[in-house]
Amino acid sequence: MILDLINKKRLGKELSYQELDYFFNGYLNGDVADYQMSAMLMAICINGMSDEETFALTKVFIDSGDILDFSDLPGVKVDKHSTGGIGDKTTLVIVPIVAACGGTVVKMSGRGLGYTGGTIDKLESIPGFRVDLSDEEIIKQVHDIGLVVTGQTADLVPMDKVIYSLRDVTSTVSSIPLIASSIMSKKIAGGADKIIIDIKVGNGALLTRRDDAKKLSDLMIRIGKYYNREVRTIISDMNTPLGYAIGNSVEVLEAMDVLKGIEKNNTFVDLCYELASNMVSMCLDIPISDALKKVKKSIQDLSAYHKFEEMVHAQKGDLSKIKVSSKEYILKAPYSGVIKKINALELGKLSQSLGAGKVEIQDKIDYTVGIRLHKQVGDFVKEGDALATIFYNKSLPSIDFNNIYKFD
Ligand code: URA
Image (cartoon, rainbow, N blue to C red; front, top):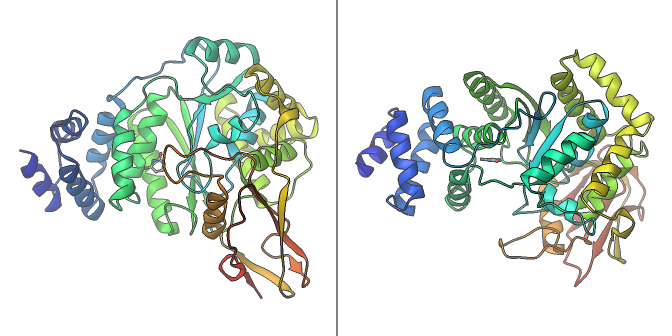
């Protein structure tokens, strides 16, 4: 039976719900071996899946663990997911904005394995910040202040954890039906009424082609319809890092600057506004143009920043103790020109080698290291101008300017 199913998928045929359930749950309980699941994943990767198969696989994933129910909490619960990228600290900005605009946000975020930390690692760079709230604490905090960002409490979609680890080492991560079922199962099991997905495309992202990002977007919207969840998507660039900071505490500080209105008029701020206004529009059921006005007002009157402070305070973090390493290296322009390209992937690798991201799951993140860019794509720089500050601790990795920057 196991081999028959692998063969069926290898031949590009459709698997039924029962067959997917049998095969994937067989893997979870040890009846299907790693090499057999690897062959199945590769067959899916090469031959794709029909919508019916993808909906069925999403159900198998959802049912593999707990399903959260926040229906007792007031308001529409909107969740956001990003397919990940370098310098992506949007959650830290948009969750307080949405709460300041009257929305309710329960955000369960993850840690990073890769170039930089995940949202939870970034929040842990605020000394004392608790990311292990119990269900009761989550519900109390949302009742009190309207927002919470914490690590996963329940055992949500354990199937995704094992399958994702195998995809990572079998070159099957970029399969569109596998990405869609992985993300959508977590959002649905996490109790979201409505969902916004930020699909990254570019050399620092899972998907490098815009037409693949569009296919993923359409598929996730169809999964949402099937499961009766409104899904909106944004396709955003990940060839260039998002914003100016890459790391953990440096990213928290940048998010705070955006919330205080100090950092504005750049592509990161634009993306935050676009995501936040979609979330507010979904939460309050208002047109996006009205939601955008509310979002901008929450920055101008500092209500979004105050929501962030309230959340940090409620979760026992101390913003006055946030630390960035005092060991700095200034990367200077070797000649004059206009910056044509800043390579997100190379800066991600640099940030990881500084210690801001993990290589192995057991590695410890250094919250204080990272990169702060001073210039963006399109800026003119003179020879000797500071392009970036590298905050390091142990030793400074070698930095190849030509790998990171292209000048006109
Ligand atoms: N993010 C996820 O959660 N799952 C994927 O498969 C890809 C990105």
